[in-house]
Image (cartoon, rainbow, N blue to C red; front, side, top):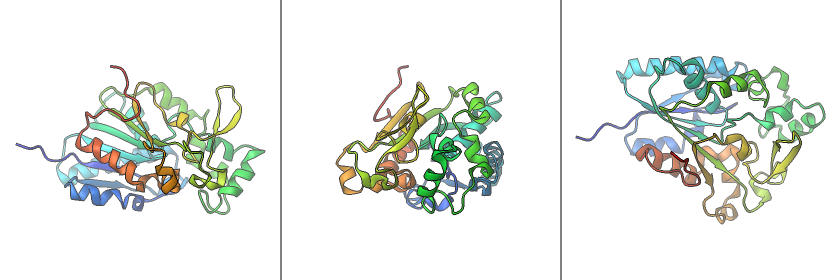
Length: 277
C-alpha cells in the first residue's frame, strides 16, 4: 500500500507573500502533494520573528485540525522565513518536539545572521546600501530601526544568539539551497555588480561572488548539514543570471527541481555537500 504524500508547508520571506510560490505550487499539485501556504502580516517587519514563529505554530495546529492530519510535514522556506521556522522548531518546540517535521528546506536562508541587515543599520554604509536597493529590496522610504525582522537577523542580535544556543534538532533533516555567482556575472545582481556583502571572520566588510546578492553562502551554511550550491552548471548563469538572485530563487527551475527531489526522495544526498554520519 502506497503511503499518502506528506503535506508541505510553505513559508515566504521578509516583505514577501505566498504568491512567491506560484511556480512551486503547480508542481506540488501535479504530484498530489498537499500544500499549506503560511502568510503572516508581520513578514513586512512589523512583528518580530519570535511572534511570526508563534503564528506559524498556530497555523500548523489549525491546518492539522482542519485536515485531521497528525503525521510529519515538510517545511519549505525562503530567506528569513527559514529563521522563523527554525525558531519554532528549535526554540519554542526544541524540548517537547511536539511538531513532527521530516525536512526543513531553506532557500537562500540567513541561518547565521544577515550582513545585509547589519549594513542597513551601519551609520556609514547603511544609507548608501538602502538607497541602492530602494524599490528593489526595500521600500521607499525605509527606516531599518523600525523593522523588527531586520533587527532580529542582525549578526549579533539576541534572536540569533538564542537560535545558535538552541542547536539543530536531530529528528529533522535540514536542507539548504543557495546560489553563487561562479561566473562573476554582473547581471546576476546588478545593484552590487553581481556580488554580495558579507562580514569576514576578522570583522571586516567585503564583497564576494559567493552569494545571491543579498545572502552570502557563509550566512546560509549550517554545520553538519547538507547543502545544494547552484547552479550546478555555471553556464546557467550565462542564459538567465537573474534567476539565481535572492529575489528569484523561489521561482528558479533548478531550485524547484531540488525541492521536488527532496520531497519525493527525502533520503537523497545533497548535491554539493553530504555531512559525515
